[in-house]
Image (tube, rainbow, N blue to C red):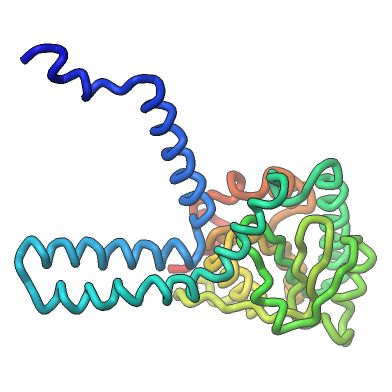
Length: 267
């Protein structure tokens, strides 16, 4: 076999460039979906596709026909199911990419305001839950609470969670340097929780972190402890300094923790 016959198997720089671009796009899509409900749905669709091809190979006509019908109309269902993620992704194409939780030089200011508010609430034994939006939009949960457009400040956050105030029972949603909602109801975790001492706020924090990539900060009303939930992992007994570090680095790396003492995750 001559070199000329196998030359087409050797990629040139143009092919390598295309491969790298496609690989990066796939990586960014997977990173965007990681830890969210959308990734679980995507894995389910992948499993159905594998079953479909297996049925074709094994000539299981009834199964392949049924799955063929499912895939025919499944595209429309996927648009409905992935609507929040698709809308957020398309919106991001029209604006400059933001790294981390907050844009520009205001990031540290917003982190300081959140940490200051959480510290006050913990010292006063006031329960609170704050969800900090990252890549996946939290607009879906605005419908259950009160929409707002207010700059993040420690005073405002402490006021919202004052006992007996109209909005103190729900969650505050934060996008960039703006509070976009208060009194919002978050989904509870659907997985068994090994620690029975976790209350509704902690279960809601876990639930939202399982369905999105948000970082959810919780102040316990009973123990005054601070907790942070990210991607289905809950870190308890966090100090204000640790909280500042988690938020400053987007929480993802710091919260990839084992279920050691002080941590909790669905069993």
